[in-house]
Image (cartoon, rainbow, N blue to C red; front, side, top):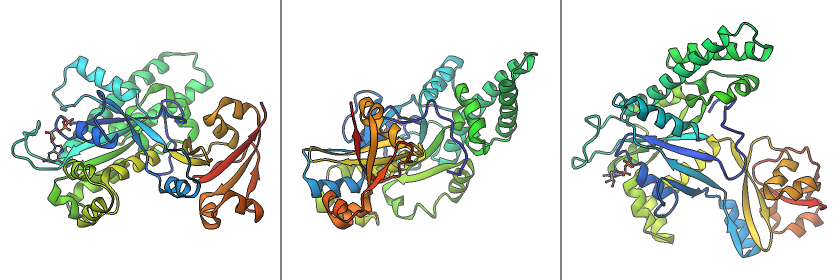
Length: 366
Ligand code: GDP
């Protein structure tokens, strides 16, 4: 997703990170929402687990009472038919998008003669593009309005001056149909623009809902769609809601064999959940106790002390140090005690930057 700074609603940290599903009516949003949360969601909001094989390994090692994966909150936004929205509907839709931290575009690529497409024939590139264009336009309107207001203010602060510069850069890009996420803003510029809720600044990925027979050769189909998505900084994850719902009814070896028959080792929804997690800039640290084995979502770059606060504010406040091991080391030697005996546990202070897959035991006083 490039190295550019990310503009979030607020720094995604704990459980409240929210992924918004957008797409045309009948693209498969409700179906995917149900599949991602592993059951029937109540309404348009659901929680998806982020699969993590490391948790299975730790659970086999420790036999905890509970295994808790990281999760994401999902919200299905109302179906959008580009070019056919009333003014009020448009702003309601954009307000919905503004409340999310990242977007999952659900794009229909499956043919089904019994299911009319709202814009005529099936054309994933046209659909993906038209939704993105609505978002680009909404951003352009907002950026221009804010810039205009700042320009009128003769007593602009130094900060507002820099805001204006960043807004002008965005306006230019948006005018050329370049989303803000591709403008290459510095971390500081991204911070200056955080409050404006720009829609195309959000990380975005695409669930390309393909037909069952297309799952095998998705890479060669729709080359223009792949090219467009790359330019727009949108990661494409092909999956078939139809196939996924068949997989959902299977377990164990049946499931593995069924996936293999499509040349897959993992379900599309698992890939989607993990891709969304990464797109949000989230990584996991792990805790491994006899009671619970758990993955904790943190933003990449979080310090040990802040990470401790994800578990409990008391641990953050009374932080003394963190005992840390890489998951791979723990897996290799087989137990925390073996790590300690071999001097492989690291003692880290409050400013240590936690890495993905760090297994941590916090020392603290209350
Ligand atoms: P939404 O309007 O975007 O929420 O779309 P839904 O998830 O409600 O799906 C609309 C219709 O398309 C439903 O009847 C689904 O069963 C059907 N559908 C969704 N995904 C697929 C698919 O991959 N293949 C086929 N053939 N039908 C699908």
